[in-house]
Image 1: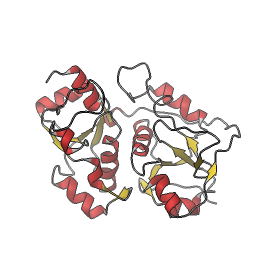
Image 2: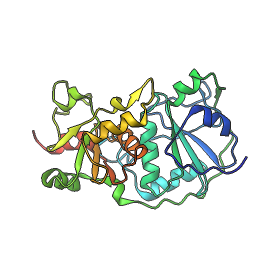
Image 3: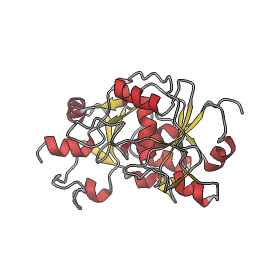
Length: 272
């Protein structure tokens, strides 16, 4: 089967089923906090992308902190990823942490990556084959990471963007959390909102584990920001902000970035 190059950042389960044996295809499971062993079933040939322990700075005070270029390259090579690989990312919720994996690859200069629309739930719903993981050792890849600083925003830059309103800041948390009507799930973290931000709950873009139609998604974004304007996406801990980044990319937004620390960092460092 011919080598794959993606023209879109998302693929269907039927597409993946038809291309599963492609020469350069690697399927990754980006589910957070997953038990990944010989007792659980998965999409055939899948490899576990361990966001929390392998692809985050575990020494940082906040969860899922952006890793160094060296760490990302080392761990990606350990998964057998090459510079000419084509990567499809799935997760067990449908569209959730798979978007974070997609964004991390983009942030390290790798664009031949797509998210599986509907993830593992949609794969099972379609009745496609599932199997336990293959314990065959993985041949290390030759992937080279090249950090793209425009993809990520960190605390000082976020504070400046909030103060100067240089970027539209879109928060992916629920309306209840955004409006301080319900507590944060992280124990001890105060309620609140980054000043000058607006709200677009990431679930707004989803229906039955999959993305809604592109025209509906485009309408949701255009109510908040024009395609020419720079956008920073934020959420609770940098995961679901990437769902918005993926959706925005699908409908043609290009000047987008993700605030890595998101509300967990901001709410911890900035008093209400």
